Image (cartoon, rainbow, N blue to C red; front, side, top):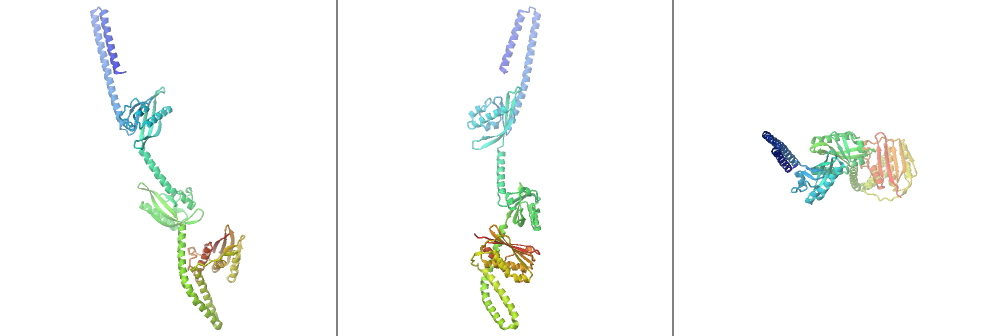
Amino acid sequence: MSKRIILVTYILSGMTTLIFFNYYLTNTLHDKEASILLQRVEGFVFVLLIGLILFLYLSKREEFKQLKEEEQLRSTLINSMVDFVNFKDGEGRWLESNTVGLQLFQLENVDYKGKKDSELAEYSHFYKESLIYCENSDQETWEMGEITRCEENIPLPNGDFKTFDTIKVPLFYEDGSRKGLVVIGRDISERIAAENQLLASEQRYKSLFEHNPYPVLMLDLKGTITTVNPRFETVTGFHNEEVQGARFADFNFSTEAKELIHSSCEYVREKQKGIKKGKDIEFVTKNGNSILLSCTFVPMLVGNELAGIITYAKDVTQIRETERRLRRTEKLSIVGELAASVAHEVRNPLTSLKGFVQLLSSSDHPHEQYYTIMLSELDRINLIVSELLVLAKPQELTFSENQIVELMGEVRDLLKMEANSSSTQISIQVKNEIPLILCEANQLKQVFINMVKNALEASASHIAIGIEKIKDSITITIKDNGCGIEKNRMKHLGEPFYSSKEKGTGLGLTVSCRIIEAHQGKVHFNSKSGHGTEIKIELPMYK
């Protein structure tokens, strides 16, 4: 009830009361004392009535003052909030909004109270669509009848936008009719931007990790594998689930490699920002192959705290093999230059010496045995010179169709006497039908002779030669049960001037490898000291 109505009611009721009492006193009461008494009662009633009205007024004034103070406090509170706060009635009309909400929609100078969002949209052309969307969203909250929460994007004049985490609380009367709506929106633009930046950073990191061309392992501070990238799985054959939780140093490494891994991890832990590049580590893959990994250990920092160690394990197997071949090529090149300058110079006097020795041996019979030894040694020198010439200059090869089985049979017949003298048995086993291949027969025979003679000189009692056709190649296996070759000497096989024999030059095996390479073939050596040697030669079939 308004103040004006209360005042008019009070005046009318007072005037009515006065008229009633005056009329009653004038026309009804003739007793003077009763009239005086009634006037006193009238005055007393008016005093009570005025006192009651004054009391009610003061009470209401105190309540009004208290409400005013509470309203000011509430207004101060909501205006000091960084969140957008808006109170609406059951029809969606704005009752009150804080400064943040008015500034957001550029309604600071608009009398917003009592207006709906769609009506306020006419005062803010830029935010027209946003305000209409808010009204539709309010309607959805009313229909759901429960608190809703969503993210709303509000555009800005500069082309950017702000994101609000908006909570809408519908209020209802007891009969279910709409009472009001409280809207609270928190500006989460900075958080969203930080999350997007973090997500972008994570995606870049994920791309760097998952698509890295090198195997990458993540270790905790104890050296335990936490995760590996797909390239590690491709190179080693071990999947992430198989290695997760295992210590990197517990793989099938040598003692030296384990110490290297341990010292590298320790270096990163102590230095924290230090990077440790280790030596090559031999790693055995899941399928049993041996590869070389060049590992680099890098600290994984979260803020300024060391959270783990990242290990980049570059597969350098092919690189090291290429370097080895280059070194071998350089050696062969030097040998070739040396051979070219020496072989021709040696051969001419060698021919003369051999002729004179043969002449003397025919006339000086008492010393014939010495001449025989001299001729044997001269022949050996001539053989070495011939091998030097093979290394010095690539030979012009003329390939023709030949049967490997027949060539190997000729080699066995040629070395049969030597094998019998050392009680060595040579057997040839042909496992399937062997077709003709294009090759230089004499050079391949030289290779087979060198290989079989090496087996004879290794004190073998049996030399097993196997020949078979595997896919598009012919595989020749020469296996003996001789003394074998030590592991540290295996990597030097085929190098010129490296030989385990007392009078060996190492050129025979070098020349053999060169001949096989010229035939586009491969040579593999497998040996263990005291358990014999196996040589596998693969020659391609030309169609």
